[in-house]
Length: 60
Ligand SMILES: [Zn+2]
Image (cartoon, rainbow, N blue to C red; front, side, top):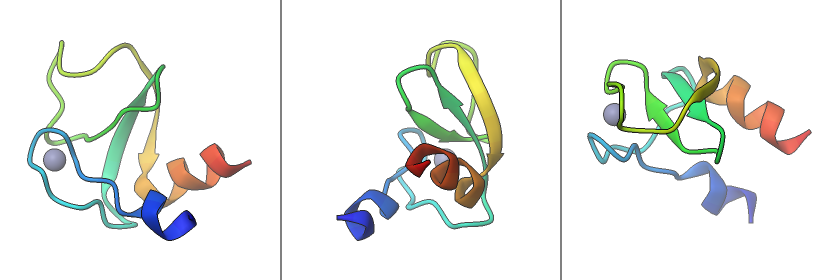
């Protein structure tokens, strides 16, 4: 089901993430664009990088 997992939308702008988008991920694995991020929109940021990098780490 990796394809489904890859088609996550940003909770703020509702666009699908692209591999090169720079994102933040919080402690419950909510992903948001860095440009869409604002304090309070997600929980505490635990990591950041490109969407592809974050997905790779999640699958490890
Ligand atoms: Zn966004």
